[in-house]
Amino acid sequence: MSGVPAAYGDRDARRVPVRGLTVLYDAGCPLCCFVRDWLVRRPQLVPLELVPAGSTAARDLFPRLDHSTTRAEITVVGDAGQVYRGASAWIVTLWALRDHRRLAHRLSTPAGLRLAKGAVLAAARWRGATASAGAQTYHRGDGWAYDPRDGRHHTPAGCDAGTCAAP
Image (cartoon, rainbow, N blue to C red):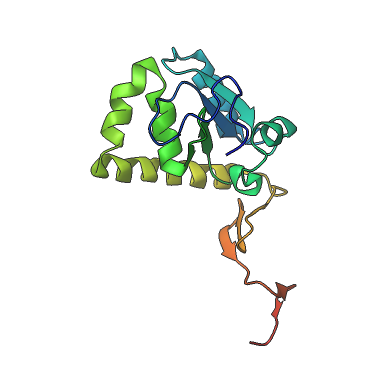
C-alpha cells in the first residue's frame, strides 16, 4: 500500500512490528472527536497520529485507501501498510496505549472480539441516534450506504430514484 512513511519503506507488513498507527476518525461526529481527544491524552506505547477521515491529509497519506468507507467505519493504518477496520481497529488502537494493552489482548480473543464488536455496534447506534436530521449519509462503492437517521441500506447497481433496471 502506498502512503507508508518513507522512513520505514516497505517492511513486509505481515512480519514486522508496528511502530506507528494512523487513526482515521470522523471529524463531524461528536463521539469520534471525544474519543480522539481522549486518545491524545493517554500515554502511548506506539505513537498514534489522528487524522480526519476523508480529509486531504488522509488522501495524501493513503492515496490507495478506499476513503468512502473510512467515515462510516473506524479505520486504522499501521506504518507498514496494515489496515484495520471496525472492532479490529478499536483493539489495535487500545493496544497502542500503555494503560490499555492488557485489555486489547483480552479483546483479541474470540470471546473478547464479540464484546469489541458489540461496543463498536453500540457506538454506531449512539452515533446514529444523536445525529442531526441533516446528517450526512455515507456511501460505499458496493451499493451499501449508512444513514445515521435509519441505518444501513443497500441499493443494487442500476437502481436510481427507487426504480431498478429489469433483470
